[in-house]
Image 1 (spheres, rainbow, N blue to C red):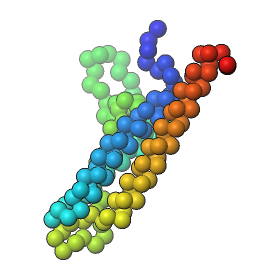
Image 2: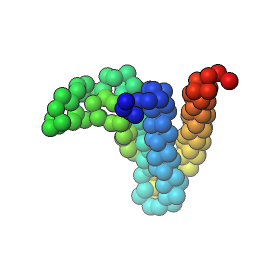
Image 3: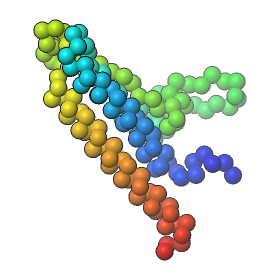
Image 4: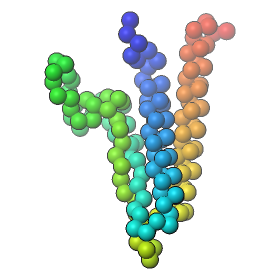
Length: 140
């Protein structure tokens, strides 16, 4: 019996979301750390749309590898494993005199939102594992 998919789609999606949110935290932290670096342009990781497409199985290049020698399609065949996110620049509307485009208030807001979503995902994942544990124990 293969181990892949043993927990189902929910656990896979929540796990992937945690990975992507942790990566996004790194980008936001870098933005805050470079708030006074001349010419710095902040970045963030955009992944929600890509995650939704993979979940729906409707990636841009839907298809299946029928032979191991085939070239994989972009985005990992519309699977969760293929979701990597896209790094995008998020400059402030009014850059500073030194060309720095970090707006501290925006970055702090993004940090808080990302942290709240990360914590909520951890709680959902915990509840999912509690359900699995209950099923294994037989409802006791």
